[in-house]
Image 1: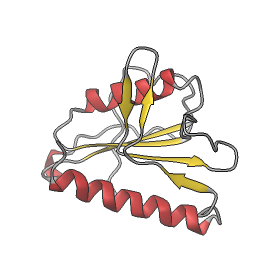
Image 2: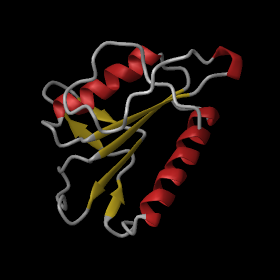
Image 3: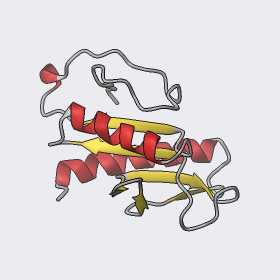
Image 4: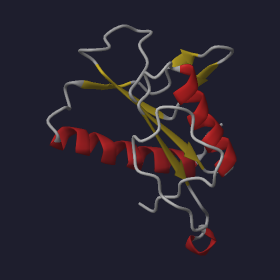
Length: 134
């Protein structure tokens, strides 16, 4: 069950993304589909935040193009596994997975390489995770 820190991080990041979508003139062309369950090859999954274009993917079972996973108690490896799930189970329909790992103290944030957004169309390799400080 998600706690206050998870919901705070999810809300802030969701607002920032939606604001950027608006600046691009796409606010009414993208649908936010939080808490929607998507069925993979073996099991289903819900992301913390998802967006899909409503004109090119209007059906209820269409996959999103942008997925956000937020982790407070989740490990980095668990978040990377979640990204792998979205990228591999969607058959290439999910284009970007953003991972947001929330740390308790700034001094504990490990230094990790940041990978460019949207460069992986296949599962993310098993390498140290992405750490973005927002």
